[in-house]
Image (cartoon, rainbow, N blue to C red; front, side, top):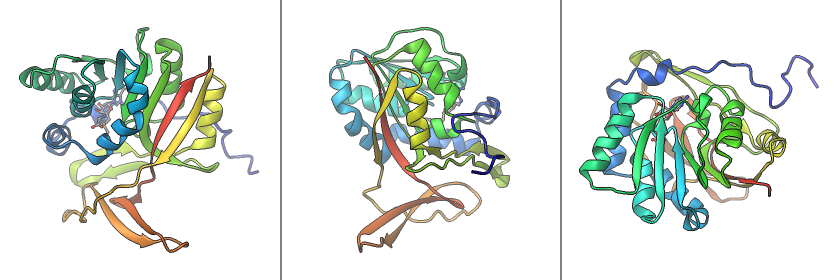
Length: 257
Ligand SMILES: C[S@@+](CC[C@H](N)C(=O)[O-])C[C@H]1O[C@@H](n2cnc3c(N)ncnc32)[C@H](O)[C@@H]1O
């Protein structure tokens, strides 16, 4: 093995939040549109997590943005109390405003830093489309394991089912924005969980069930699909955003008793 390659599980990038505080028109539209039309990935994750949610009383959504996905989960599970936490105050305020307007009772939003969580007990932790957008997965997962100690964590992000991870940083020059699109190795994440008293019990690729046309503007990241024929003749719908192919997975991590 090449000795210059970092050992698995070893993060080397500092936390960074500048890109989230600066909310431009594209970012606000991303958060607001979902309140009108829930994303397919949100609906699929709700189905994927529904077994766990049935027996939960209190669930935390980390990196909840303006809370559209949390609100979707709350509407599907009226007996569960949902708390959404995000770093950006403006998004938290927007989430609370929209939840109040729509009269959703089993839901609240608060500001928090996932890299420095307060100790608080929740049965389960959700996170949608956020872990790959953080500089690393290790510290965020460790914060959950040690401060929240939930029975389960269910999240969607970019993963790979082999011993390869990618640290990807996207720069969109047209909107002066940058963000990570990291792909995490599932075996590496599994080992990390096992070292902290948790087990990665399920990893399911998220395949869209609809075609999405290519956006007209090539300068802004935006998901579209391309249909390809796999080597066994099956139809595969690939998700692409800007220059990247997105390998979406939904995973469940459970506490080892
Ligand atoms: C790609 S967005 C996803 C938002 C939402 N979960 C969704 O599915 O639409 C990532 C979110 O993570 C939040 N975030 C980034 N770093 C964070 C941190 N350290 N603590 C809490 N939230 C953070 C950002 O403010 C942003 O709202």
